[in-house]
Length: 165
Image (cartoon, rainbow, N blue to C red; front, top):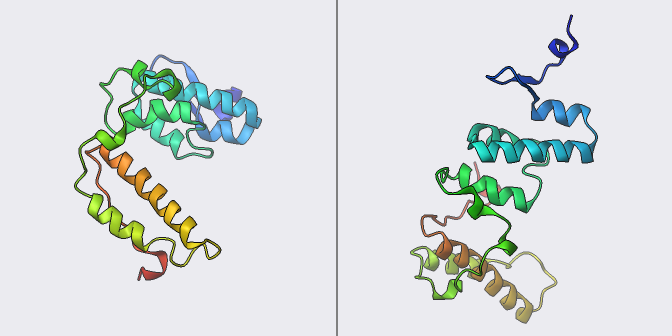
């Protein structure tokens, strides 16, 4: 019997080519080699727009590996498959975007501010009021920047774990 037939996680592509699945790579390949192989598979899936493969790889051990790959994969996962892939190179290769503070306000900013004001009450306990104020501003700026740069997103607060039934 052919050894390849005994390998449980081998994909046979439409053109007869055989490619290892993420599961096979994780079990039998050393970490650095595994990351190189997984990176190559993710890159190929991004180039072909194979969101199903990207999703499987993203939810497998080690996820999408690094920011350079995530920048290429996430637009596809979010439904921007018709966007030119060259646009999603590493951020350092891109021209500087406009200052987020100059972008139009997002409708959820009021709720963000309410939630940020309630943050840092119980944790961490070793912060001075001044440091807490700085951290709250950083958190607010981070969330508001994401919302302003991506106005199609919505902000909502997930209930605390202990308040779930």
